[in-house]
Length: 244
Image (cartoon, rainbow, N blue to C red; front, side, top):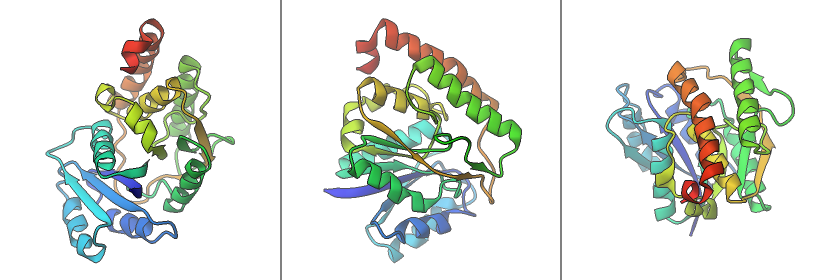
């Protein structure tokens, strides 16, 4: 069985993709990497293809036609990782907002008993660099709002830097995940929590991207606000169906 697979969804990340791949593959713990590219017009996928002969059997690429949402990209990656027998499957951004070195810390957390390891910006205060105050307040407030509604004992409920053990992804019905934007991160944690899995937060420093542009928009925020309430109500009134 393979051990570590890092899933990196991409859309127009040509400025970051080569560097992030080489950083992940250069760590002292062995990680393979799967790029799920949504038809980036800037040629992101072509850069990945050029790197693949340099790192045989360590870089993988799934190309999709057009932007289909962050959540569906990760679901595609999760299914691929399960089919290819990986034990630990990670979510990570392509833009260096997540430090690749922290993958090792997520790995250690899961090796030592966590079912889900969350790279947390808010475990000990606010550890975010180069964000404007308005965005910090929005992100921090959203995580607190989700924690209040769901009652999950997780400080960074919207975090996108996560390690899932194989048994978590095999237990959750991935086809039942409804949220496709950044709120996908909330729904995955919520279902893992409802199933009783051990979720451990690993303190990280999140640094805003230096190259390329953010994919955040108003629709993503709306999905999170209203989707969380719907998600919670479903879990209260028909938990068995919600988890099936």
